[in-house]
Amino acid sequence: MATVILMYGPEHGRILATEATEGEVLREAGWSYQLTDDVDVRGRRIARAYMD
Image (cartoon, rainbow, N blue to C red; front, side, top):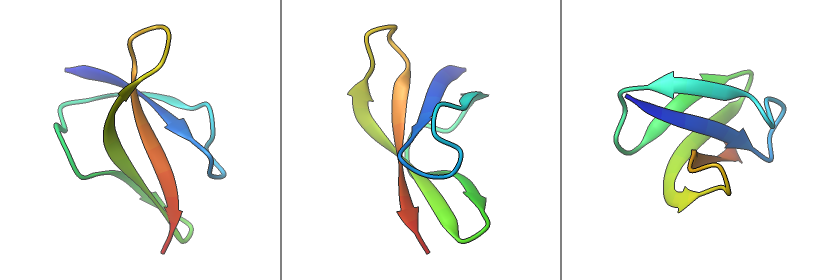
C-alpha cells in the first residue's frame, strides 16, 4: 500500500492510502487525480489534479 498526497485540485493536501500503482487515484466533482512518479519530502507519491 502506498501513501499518496493529492495536489493542485479542490482536494489539495488530502492524503490517501491506496494500492494503485499508476493511473487514476480519485475522481470527484469534475476532477481526476493521476499518480506520478514524483514524491514529496515525506516520501508520499504525488497525484496531480486535472479537470475532466
